[in-house]
Every structure is written in C-alpha cells, then in structure tokens.
Image (cartoon, rainbow, N blue to C red):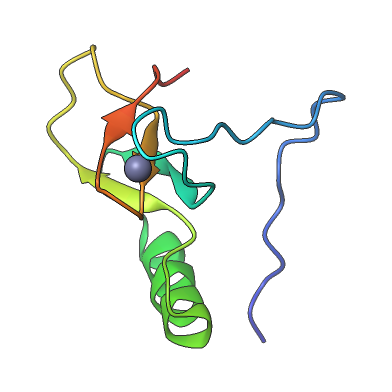
Length: 82
Ligand SMILES: [Zn+2]
C-alpha cells in the first residue's frame, strides 16, 4: 500500500498564483533538487491519471535564484521559491 503523503500543515493555505504571462491557472510548484523515488513515483502516477503533472521537476541545479512556479500553459516560470 502506498503511504499517505504527509503534507506540512500550515494554517494558511498556499494560494496558487495565475501565470503572469498567459493568465493560465494551470501552474504547478517547481520542485528543485533531486526527487526521492517516492516523489517521482507519485509524480508519474499523477501525470498518468490526470494528464498533467502535479509538480514540475526543476532539476538538481539549484542556483539560489530559482522560480517557484511553472506554467503548464506556456512554460513560463515565475515567482520565487520559498
Ligand atoms: Zn503561462
């Protein structure tokens, strides 16, 4: 059985921004760094079931000045990661 993903429970729900270029709401948070096998499996399964990924894999090259959001509509990346 897959383990239930434990999300950090902050009291403020994270507002999903709209793409600042195409105004699409199809934006996903960018995950920087190497995903764990669990994350990657979840990512693949979600993508298969929904036709789009729940997150964007930003890769392992973190520059310290990385965008936090990826637009699935136009590919624009914006915002700052936390
Ligand atoms: Zn966009």
